[in-house]
Image (cartoon, rainbow over all chains, first blue to last red; front, side, top):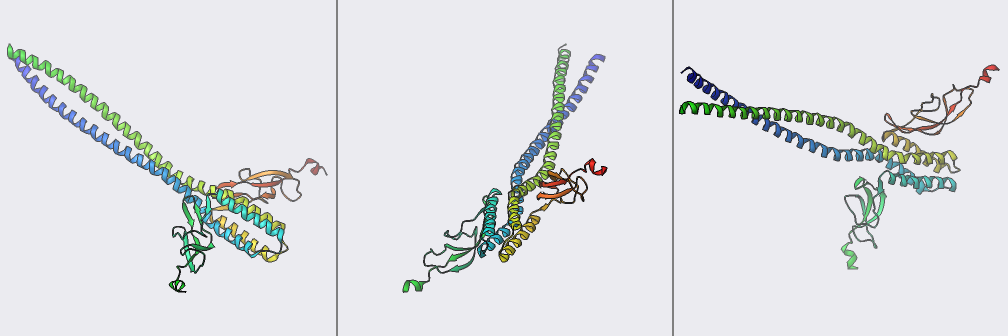
Length: 176
Length: 176
């Protein structure tokens, strides 16, 4: 009886322990699953941040180039105006003309290249129309004059070219 | 006997199940701990990457500025050489001189400023000594002439100034 009773007591205690352990297993499984999910989410965030970081680095580099180049474009404009005015001193003029060629080359090295304009169809993405002009030779909508040179940095626009565009032919033209 | 035997059999089975469950609890605790450690490491990596990313963005921006500005400095040198040679055409000369002033101002806007040199103690961090020269007026080790202007970008050096430095006074001087 004693032993049997003990045995029954042990079995009840076992059942209790087993229930506690079942709970513990359940709790641990749940916690492990939560933790694994948490890890996966953090890993996904991490990958996103890394991917974005590499794009952002390129953008920051380009912004740095842009910030450095933009203030220098009016300097080239000024040099070109000076050269366009001409000079009575050919030696000095040639020295300045050589500097101008060096300037355009340096801008190319720095990543900047001129926007093509005269003879091209007007393109609002890179051209800023400042006037239209009737033209006998040019197709309507073609750039016929460049007022200020435009510049691009790789595939991006630094500043648009300011241009004059061939006007649509007036109907009166075809009546004559 | 039967029951008792069954009871003993159950108790053996219970003990076996308990041992299996003990193993399972142990395994789960271990796995959970591992998973938590893994999460902490990933979180630390993540924080590092984020901290580094903000520093790297600044560095990339500066690299972009540097890449854009460096090729343009020889253009300013060339313009300065032309101006130093002088001209017989005062109007043209003044146009070019105005362009030069605009250039220096644009470099400042772009973040670049000249390195101070003449009259300053020679500083190997920003000066590149190309010669020494005896000098009666300048302290030995003082920059007495600038051959090529140096430029900095914020706190960083773009290119050093090339300078001539006052030579140490010879002992024979003090004997006289």
